[in-house]
Length: 474
Ligand SMILES: *Cc1c(COP(=O)(O)O)cnc(C)c1O
Image 1 (cartoon, helix red, strand yellow):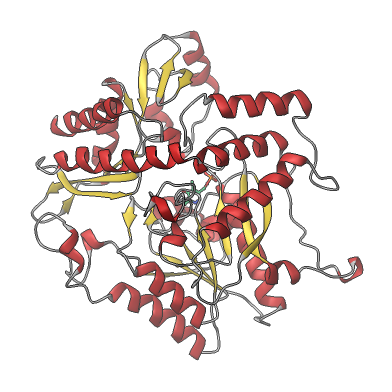
Image 2 (cartoon, protein in one colour):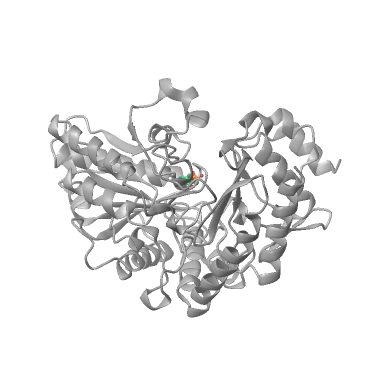
């Protein structure tokens, strides 16, 4: 055992990890990264097939982000946003508002444009900020005494107590029920396991949705309108647009988001879009002529009232997050000091200049035509390579939205019978992939493939080949 591994085993408690399993094996100790490649402390190389838990956009050690960080470090690494301003944070806020409006659909119904940015540290805090602002806005402006929120079956919005309250993954969330406020859950689309039998009985293809009766939209509409009729309207509707990540990389059929967002608006609910995973180009380029495809909402013509961003914000370098919101929400907190309308919320590292400098460099990169082209190309390669997995009997579904993919393993693909979670199928496949030099992490029986945007043709082939061989091993 490497001496550093001994230290890890003795002292570190890892997130979302059964530590008994962890302590049974020598950990992979990552020491260096360049592009899509990570190197461990002994010099062995791996491909980063989930972009270091969905954060890295341009790959490790990108020269432009490194330069921006070095420059900023030479000036100022941190100062407080409580009482002071700094240049990178101010420029980043402008850049984010600009990026969010540049691609916003002109016909985006109902909502005001995103105009203000509140910084925090991670995806969970970005959601907490949106939640608290929406709650207070609903009380002050809509005169709702006890604002309630509606979120999706399978939703994951982070691990702080407010974010967990919006979540509906029993495995993660049930234990803490006593700590949480109640939020309502509503059916989310999961076409592969559609309870209305709308999915075709054989392997999925695009025609699957043709016979769909939009029962999953009706479920949301029904919930929203019933609440309104009962005089207890929802203050907010919380959604991860286009694809629910931690739920198992579950895509929404085209049109779903537009329809449910319309229903939420009609019922008077604010829309909280969690683009912590989907943001910054992850969901692909609809058409390069229409922009860089930075946000998933825009694909369906939706302008949310809150947009939560984290993971890829800094290009995946640093813990920084942003919650964008509208002028009307901002105004609900304006007043004389003595009115105590202030948003009493903030963190020690809010608006951190290093994080903001990295984010600005990343945003610049995303908007270059070269990056847009590379993403469009990588998306095509992924589609081609992933299609080769269909003939494996353990593969039930292959789902891809832009540059994110999930491969669902099943015991019997004809019946779509899932593997028992206790069998640790997904974990075992990922362990075998690691031994083949490819790193990713499963969600239950779903193997995630989410390569950095710099991934080359050959690297992607190796990722999918390792995935294929590791699944085929049984
Ligand atoms: C990861 C994630 C979060 C939580 O972000 P953290 O930075 O891990 O707190 C919230 N929402 C979504 C959709 C995520 O994928």
